[in-house]
Amino acid sequence: MTPEIARQHILAAVQASIGTLHDVRFLGLADDVTRDASFSELEFDSLVEMEFCLALEEKIGIRIDPADLILHPSVNALANSRVDPVRRNR
Image (cartoon, rainbow, N blue to C red; front, side):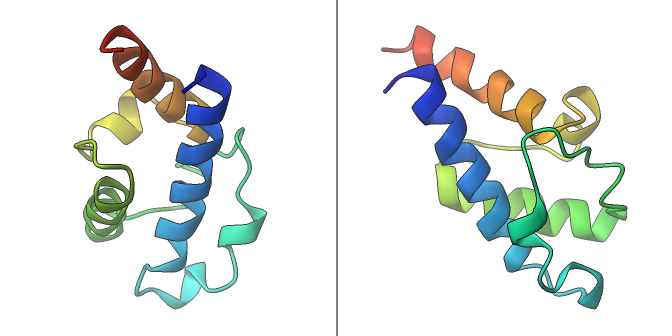
């Protein structure tokens, strides 16, 4: 899997995961999330962060910690952080 395909896969998983959140603020938002979207712009609280991380982990099979959303504050940054370990393991 190329890094670009991995990023696309992670972006799709992020969008799908946002679509599963049980918070009315996020209804219909998934399709509007882009690679440059900042998690702080999405205004996740700690409960939503945990729910999002669990949903994303389930979709991509890689453990995501809520602290990762701070260390990698955009969809693209999070995707890049997950692509590099995948690339090294291949």
